[in-house]
Image 1 (spheres, rainbow, N blue to C red):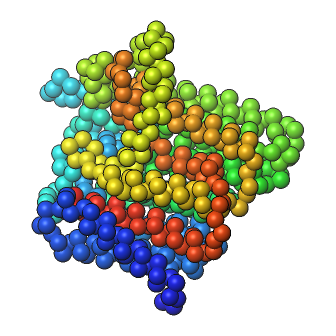
Image 2 (cartoon, rainbow, N blue to C red):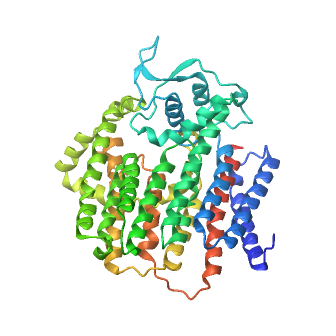
Image 3 (spheres, rainbow, N blue to C red):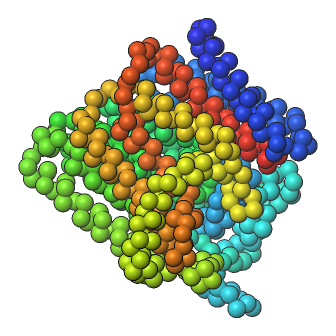
Length: 500
């Protein structure tokens, strides 16, 4: 490759950073597989260096750059992340396998010869659930063929819509048709989920006429790639939310908006909002569009009134989801922990001082949420890095302030964007508090994880950008891309140190 000295400099910076990150993870290391870790470091360096080179050759095609970066690092996650090690991946895996049989919805049934209820799947899925957290080197279940014997699991995310599991189900169907070893149901399910995330993000960046580089940086958040390269639906919800924001940016710069684009905008919001209801508030972005960008007064009115059916669909699904949420291990948990949304609302209404304190906690606890940007897995298998979380937060804030916007948004537009972002942020925490915390709980972030806020990062540069430095934009872009690629490499080395 004909890479000039400047590009080699950034590859060297990338290597130094990922090596420093790797050294910081020695506390997690058991030193049992140093060759594997050295091999992973080399692989991550090669992938990152190629990504930087590819960017220099495709600076005008950032949607292609995003697709390649997400795919290269994501495929590494697909095979590196241990069995069912992502948060709630067991349930997502069960639901995906059920969908692969053609069942669009789930059936909660009594488990034979027990007093419990659950969801019917196949024995291979249950075996993987029992080996959650194990990598392929310390278990032999990955060598077995698919066992179709009926078996049962107590949870299957019945509250989630079927479309969020279509990519994973396609991967499972392919593994079954090709008669592959059982592990390929997991790997191909993850891979197809990753492909959908990369495709939607690529479409979003291509559609947006401005903030393309900012969309790229947000889409390669390590936690986003980690979730997208799993059986989880969190990658899909995040991708649709970013797509909706990209269409807002398109509307903001387009003098004549087309009906089909409005339909895609609201469709993306609905698909995202059904999975995470507070993101239905993205529909309010329509009020930030200049009125003269609509084709007609009728289109202007209809586009704003469309918020009502959008909210109606989202609220209707939320009502259904809440009704079936207890059809899992959560039912016993809610009873034991005294979790009840209606009682929680009544308690807050009866104790306004307590309610006000909880509202303030939404903001005072934000550092804890930021710390969870590098919080991976769940339960007894969790691992995290406060160092990476702190450095990433500082880096992203610096990027949001310094990296220039092509469009100089008015202050009132930014303020409106801030209010919409805060509404979503508060909404996510409020929903979790009502549906997950004990009545009268003092903590508002119990069960709140950074992955619920991934798309909100795009609001940050939109709101706080100051463009305060004289800069060489090409150098600045390469520097920030190098830094943020280093964080993805850091995530992979953290997984390697903890899990291998």
